[in-house]
Length: 128
Image 1 (cartoon, rainbow, N blue to C red):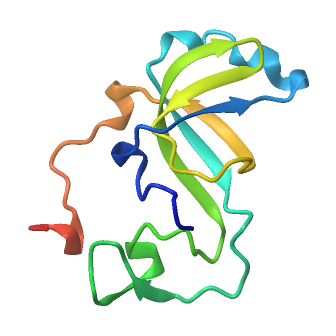
Image 2: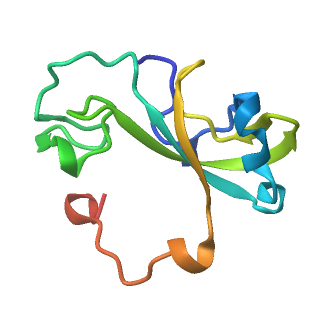
């Protein structure tokens, strides 16, 4: 996966999500949101995948559910993208950390009232 940013928050790359025309009406009212969650399929990852591997932030092996590796038993990715513009059936985004033509499974608006949590713990990443 060389050339793909590790996290969407570390990326300035721009891209476009193309929505099938039969789902275009589902974009109604999304234009008022600054960010979206994008749930997608890591279609280039083929099983089997290791249940433990090194992360970008650690030299030690960690369990797959404790790191953000794309190599997962269920190849589902999740990113938060900034919405630049929406035109017809296209969402123009910034902060792309996915490969071109990655299949999108779902899109949801990012709502700070619901999605920002205080008093969180970052597990083994604390102090890094």
